[in-house]
Image 1 (tube, helix red, strand yellow):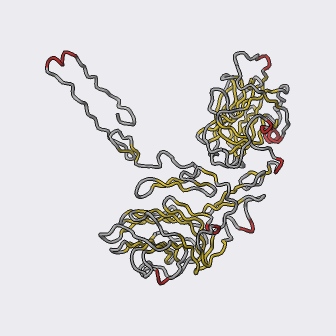
Image 2: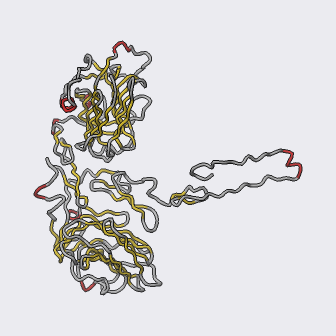
Image 3: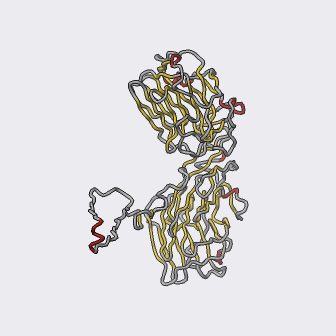
Length: 516
């Protein structure tokens, strides 16, 4: 039947077999589904929004293409149709700069006869200049598309052979600032949008609807200006820089280091957000620009938003790999947990010792366990560094079965801290997802009424609770637990209740560069 909320009424059709002997026949009952705007089909089973199912990695942006379907726009450092792969070879990111007489030459646009979608990230220091041009013929005739700066506004022009479309953005371009512009076309209709501003639209002349291109795609300028169509509207090149280009399903980034792209009179851009001589990423981290912001890919041994925190350098603990099926189980072999009633959360974070031992048993029978060894804990802390692209799984668990426990886990990519005690229970969630394929520092603390969850150096999530002591049985599970979904991640620098646990010494695989 219709996919959606059920009806609040029903028909009860009485049926008697004697009807068949009185000349009656069973009728085929018909129904009609009235679909919400985003669905279609007899039973409203087909989505009109291909991004509705969130096909792209969560760090990427899903864009609907004019002709239908979608494209995943990856952030720097990720590749693949759905941005599912971490590009471990990307160790430097350079942006080309142009001074009005340079250009980048790319292959002719393909598969754009009926439709296309192009996005360009640019910075300009002048109010006029060519951003993009692709033509059909070298004699300045035929079909073409062009994107120009004209007196501080963007102009998107195209010709299909029966009259050009000239679409102008109503929003002015700010100089010396990174902008994104998106142009798209379906048949005779074209769209233009600067940043997140107003969408401008226009149409080319009747009756032709097919775009035919044969010349190279030029960015920032052209090789020979006399080869440009006289109606393209540009007379000078870009005085600025190009950060990224996306054409349909293909992304061109790190353009200055892409030696397969011929370039003429280009230089290396040195400015915000990733200035070469004052790299915001410390300790050898690589700065990746994201328009006017950035993110850092840290060198081994460093973490943090700007790679400002050392994890021990070359002597740092090797990360271990949890595959969703394995987990580690530990036995508490130190005495009663210390009294931290008068300690501050800051004091509690900074202390660390080594005093855990491992057990080889893969399964633990709670019913047969002697609870006479259980101990009550006034406080608990988990601290670790984790890298994953999987949104679900148990990170760590300590407690007494279902009755009393503290669990750190991933749910829909967010970090969750769940507590259940004798008198209270709670769950708090991180502000940001962490299943992006990069290492993140996680701190989760419960101390009497103070509950805190912090990711990297973001402001922590805090909760005031009346939580009392947690009765444990001396067992700790890391990476999973019987009856729970296992973790698929790389984990290192694991601290529990002020004790460092060297996971790499256990019988578990080590994590390699592309493992998550």
